[in-house]
Length: 121
Image (cartoon, rainbow, N blue to C red):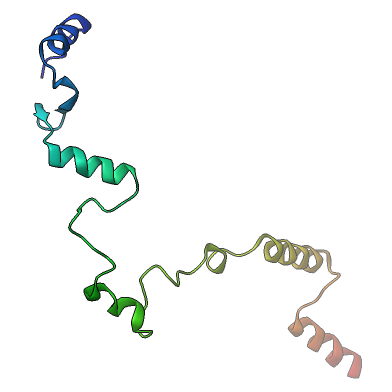
């Protein structure tokens, strides 16, 4: 679709009283005029409601989700990120132990057993 300059857009706006309903579909290169139902759906979405007005979540057909405790919503018990990522403090403790082992201040169990055997002999 060829881009229109400001003058062409101004002329189209002045000639068409419903210009505000026209949107450009860049994927399909078309100009689309929104219907009244489309506009109502957009208003409902902007208000944070469901897009479809006929959808009623308070009706009986949706109550089974909340009444049955065995059915758990997919996002109700999500695992927090801290369970998968080691904490900063764990990392610092491991670094401290590694430094102590490298300097010889701390010894592994195998090294301690060898020292005890050497002392006994």
